[in-house]
Length: 288
Length: 232
Image 1 (cartoon, each protein chain N blue to C red):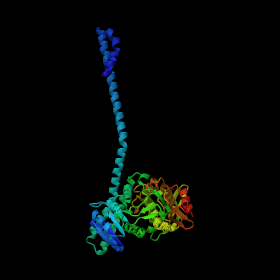
Image 2 (image 1 turned 180 degrees about the horizontal axis):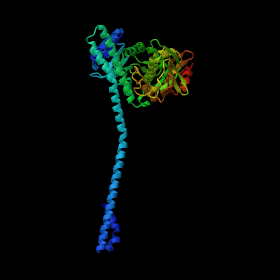
Image 3 (image 1 turned 60 degrees about the vertical axis):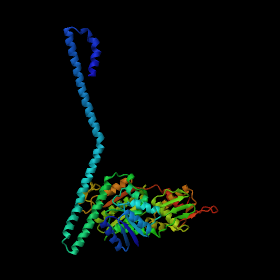
């Protein structure tokens, strides 16, 4: 509207002399219609452009929110799906046991306890994986990864599997509970697949505490290798939750490190060493 | 061994009680926070197991109040939340360890045993070495009225050295008492923490010093002006 008046006023001087004549008036009307038409089209295009741009900007702004909501929805769906399994077992076993012999009931209770604990662990793992994997979610202090490995190995149920430890001190800035979880998950996998022996080593190497674990079992099936560290990646007939390695990677990344698969049945974890070389010297030397 | 159990869920309380009795503990169970606090202040227990979510007074508040009154009983909290903020809240409130629900009774038993083993003889009174004073109940240490900023593990190491003031403790002894690593190799973790403590003691300007006894270990002593600082 405004533009029309401006344009018209700008050309008024030009067509002023023509006002009054029939041909001039007709030409002026024709001219004004042209200007109005052009301006309407420009306006329409402008509105369209602004509309499209606004829509695109709004979508971009909202994308992180929708991504977060999708993550939450996925987590809830995964949790629900995975927790159904142990809960279903608990419900069935409990109901069946009502009419059972004392021996059957005792066995049922063992199953129920085991499944309930598994559901709890699963929930804990899913909550962990739903969080950002960075140092802020860790409670950091100097921790000797070799010591953690020794303690986890001591508490593990090895059954008939021989556990061969080669540990050298390697102090990291770490969250002790989380590092225990990492070692426990790797060890549990190895023990599950081993035939007779598992080797676990920790040593400082080039700025990292390097943990290596290997079992003498059949190794990872080729079709599983690509998905190995993803949630719910499981081998056929495997009893695990499928979250163990995903958790290992989460813990390693949160510490600024990495976990990888080294072929066969070898897994490695690297956690950056803390900068304590001078502290060690000072501690020993007794300087104060 | 006497254990105080503060848990309001009757099923869990009965189950933990039975489990502890199987492990030869004598269990006293209460089901709310206020009575829990009364019991821990009045009685002597080797350990208290406290649920965080309690009617009346919550578990953290119970810990804080008990520590404020000088109670040194080891406290294990039961919590449904294991986010780092919640874990630190527990330690700040004065709890010694935590177990996340639902828990495996073997894990609970292992942590209970570890806490009881760590506790030695519960000392109500505060310790002092030179100008350094240590309050085992509130897990704080300070020089004059200036507190030292110590992490949980740093405090436990300092307290251990202070309880054994003047006595040399070997690295292996310290490792076993504080870290429970059972690590046959050599771990430098003790040296790292000794170094950190030394830095903090020096910054606080205290005459208490951790000295290295070559070939044996460490001890905490107070320098007197007449003697040169003992470094070996």
